[in-house]
Length: 174
Image (tube, rainbow, N blue to C red):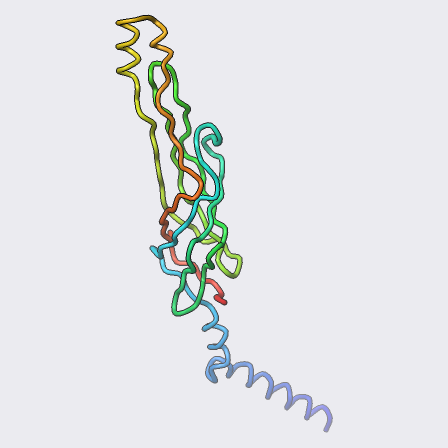
Protein backbone atom coordinates (compact mmCIF):
# COMPACT_ATOMS: atom_id res chain seq x y z
CA UNK A 1 0.00 0.00 0.00
CA UNK A 2 2.83 2.46 0.84
CA UNK A 3 4.49 1.71 -2.46
CA UNK A 4 1.27 2.52 -4.33
CA UNK A 5 0.98 5.96 -2.69
CA UNK A 6 4.58 6.82 -3.58
CA UNK A 7 3.97 5.66 -7.11
CA UNK A 8 0.77 7.74 -7.36
CA UNK A 9 2.56 10.82 -5.97
CA UNK A 10 5.33 10.39 -8.53
CA UNK A 11 2.78 10.21 -11.35
CA UNK A 12 0.93 13.27 -10.02
CA UNK A 13 4.17 15.27 -9.79
CA UNK A 14 5.16 14.24 -13.32
CA UNK A 15 1.78 15.32 -14.65
CA UNK A 16 1.97 18.68 -12.84
CA UNK A 17 5.44 19.44 -14.21
CA UNK A 18 4.43 18.43 -17.73
CA UNK A 19 1.34 20.69 -17.50
CA UNK A 20 3.32 23.80 -16.46
CA UNK A 21 3.56 25.20 -20.00
CA UNK A 22 -0.18 24.72 -20.48
CA UNK A 23 -1.09 26.27 -17.14
CA UNK A 24 0.97 29.41 -17.83
CA UNK A 25 3.40 28.82 -15.00
CA UNK A 26 6.42 29.18 -17.31
CA UNK A 27 5.02 32.27 -19.03
CA UNK A 28 5.95 34.37 -16.01
CA UNK A 29 9.59 33.34 -16.39
CA UNK A 30 9.52 34.07 -20.13
CA UNK A 31 7.90 37.48 -19.52
CA UNK A 32 10.85 38.43 -17.34
CA UNK A 33 13.13 38.37 -20.39
CA UNK A 34 13.03 41.30 -22.83
CA UNK A 35 14.69 41.39 -26.25
CA UNK A 36 16.58 44.58 -27.09
CA UNK A 37 16.01 44.96 -30.85
CA UNK A 38 18.86 45.57 -33.29
CA UNK A 39 19.19 49.28 -34.01
CA UNK A 40 18.12 50.42 -30.53
CA UNK A 41 19.76 53.80 -29.88
CA UNK A 42 22.04 54.31 -26.89
CA UNK A 43 23.38 57.80 -26.01
CA UNK A 44 26.88 57.69 -24.55
CA UNK A 45 29.35 60.12 -22.96
CA UNK A 46 33.11 59.82 -23.46
CA UNK A 47 34.73 59.35 -20.03
CA UNK A 48 38.26 60.24 -21.15
CA UNK A 49 40.01 62.22 -23.87
CA UNK A 50 40.94 60.07 -26.87
CA UNK A 51 43.86 61.39 -28.94
CA UNK A 52 47.01 60.08 -30.66
CA UNK A 53 48.99 61.42 -27.68
CA UNK A 54 47.08 59.22 -25.22
CA UNK A 55 45.90 56.20 -27.24
CA UNK A 56 47.28 53.85 -29.90
CA UNK A 57 45.35 51.72 -32.38
CA UNK A 58 43.86 48.75 -30.49
CA UNK A 59 43.64 50.59 -27.14
CA UNK A 60 40.30 50.58 -25.34
CA UNK A 61 38.59 53.51 -23.64
CA UNK A 62 35.57 54.13 -21.39
CA UNK A 63 32.16 55.64 -22.03
CA UNK A 64 28.96 55.75 -19.97
CA UNK A 65 25.26 55.69 -20.83
CA UNK A 66 23.55 59.10 -20.54
CA UNK A 67 19.85 58.01 -20.39
CA UNK A 68 18.07 54.78 -19.46
CA UNK A 69 17.27 52.58 -22.45
CA UNK A 70 13.70 51.32 -22.10
CA UNK A 71 12.14 48.43 -24.03
CA UNK A 72 8.52 47.36 -23.42
CA UNK A 73 8.34 49.77 -20.49
CA UNK A 74 11.32 48.17 -18.72
CA UNK A 75 14.85 49.51 -18.19
CA UNK A 76 17.25 47.22 -20.07
CA UNK A 77 20.34 49.49 -20.04
CA UNK A 78 20.62 51.90 -17.11
CA UNK A 79 21.93 55.46 -17.18
CA UNK A 80 25.54 55.41 -15.99
CA UNK A 81 26.17 51.88 -17.28
CA UNK A 82 29.71 51.35 -18.57
CA UNK A 83 30.42 51.09 -22.29
CA UNK A 84 33.65 50.32 -24.19
CA UNK A 85 35.24 51.61 -27.34
CA UNK A 86 38.37 50.71 -29.28
CA UNK A 87 40.77 52.99 -31.14
CA UNK A 88 41.01 51.96 -34.81
CA UNK A 89 43.37 54.66 -36.15
CA UNK A 90 45.94 56.73 -34.28
CA UNK A 91 48.71 58.79 -35.83
CA UNK A 92 50.42 61.87 -34.42
CA UNK A 93 51.04 64.98 -36.47
CA UNK A 94 54.26 64.77 -38.44
CA UNK A 95 56.76 66.89 -40.28
CA UNK A 96 55.97 68.67 -43.56
CA UNK A 97 52.58 69.60 -42.07
CA UNK A 98 51.15 66.06 -41.84
CA UNK A 99 48.02 66.23 -39.62
CA UNK A 100 47.23 63.97 -36.66
CA UNK A 101 44.46 61.42 -37.07
CA UNK A 102 42.33 59.50 -34.57
CA UNK A 103 39.43 57.09 -35.15
CA UNK A 104 37.46 54.69 -33.00
CA UNK A 105 34.50 52.36 -32.83
CA UNK A 106 32.10 51.78 -29.96
CA UNK A 107 32.05 48.06 -29.17
CA UNK A 108 29.71 47.26 -26.25
CA UNK A 109 27.63 48.37 -23.28
CA UNK A 110 26.60 46.53 -20.12
CA UNK A 111 22.87 45.75 -19.67
CA UNK A 112 21.10 45.79 -16.29
CA UNK A 113 21.55 42.02 -15.93
CA UNK A 114 25.31 42.26 -16.58
CA UNK A 115 25.22 40.99 -20.18
CA UNK A 116 27.45 42.67 -22.74
CA UNK A 117 25.37 44.21 -25.55
CA UNK A 118 27.29 44.77 -28.83
CA UNK A 119 27.08 48.32 -30.20
CA UNK A 120 28.06 49.99 -33.46
CA UNK A 121 29.22 53.54 -33.99
CA UNK A 122 32.40 55.00 -35.45
CA UNK A 123 34.07 58.40 -35.35
CA UNK A 124 37.16 59.82 -37.01
CA UNK A 125 38.94 63.16 -36.62
CA UNK A 126 41.86 64.64 -38.51
CA UNK A 127 43.85 67.73 -37.62
CA UNK A 128 44.39 70.57 -40.07
CA UNK A 129 46.89 69.80 -42.80
CA UNK A 130 49.73 72.33 -42.92
CA UNK A 131 51.59 70.74 -45.83
CA UNK A 132 51.12 73.72 -48.15
CA UNK A 133 52.37 76.17 -45.53
CA UNK A 134 55.37 73.96 -44.74
CA UNK A 135 56.40 73.73 -48.40
CA UNK A 136 55.91 77.49 -49.01
CA UNK A 137 57.96 78.41 -45.92
CA UNK A 138 60.69 75.99 -47.03
CA UNK A 139 60.87 77.48 -50.52
CA UNK A 140 60.73 81.13 -49.44
CA UNK A 141 62.70 80.97 -46.26
CA UNK A 142 64.54 77.89 -45.19
CA UNK A 143 64.56 74.13 -44.85
CA UNK A 144 63.18 74.43 -41.29
CA UNK A 145 59.70 74.85 -42.81
CA UNK A 146 59.79 71.12 -43.56
CA UNK A 147 59.81 70.48 -39.81
CA UNK A 148 56.46 72.29 -39.40
CA UNK A 149 53.92 69.88 -37.83
CA UNK A 150 50.28 69.43 -38.84
CA UNK A 151 47.27 70.07 -36.64
CA UNK A 152 46.25 67.92 -33.69
CA UNK A 153 43.18 65.67 -33.54
CA UNK A 154 41.26 64.48 -30.49
CA UNK A 155 37.89 63.63 -29.00
CA UNK A 156 37.49 65.40 -25.67
CA UNK A 157 36.12 63.92 -22.45
CA UNK A 158 32.38 64.60 -22.17
CA UNK A 159 31.65 64.28 -25.91
CA UNK A 160 28.23 62.68 -26.51
CA UNK A 161 27.93 59.90 -29.08
CA UNK A 162 24.90 57.99 -30.30
CA UNK A 163 25.39 54.29 -30.94
CA UNK A 164 23.03 51.48 -31.94
CA UNK A 165 22.74 47.88 -30.84
CA UNK A 166 24.25 45.57 -33.44
CA UNK A 167 21.74 42.71 -33.16
CA UNK A 168 18.93 41.57 -30.82
CA UNK A 169 19.97 40.61 -27.28
CA UNK A 170 17.71 39.15 -24.59
CA UNK A 171 18.14 40.59 -21.09
CA UNK A 172 16.38 40.35 -17.75
CA UNK A 173 15.18 43.92 -17.02
CA UNK A 174 14.78 45.44 -13.63
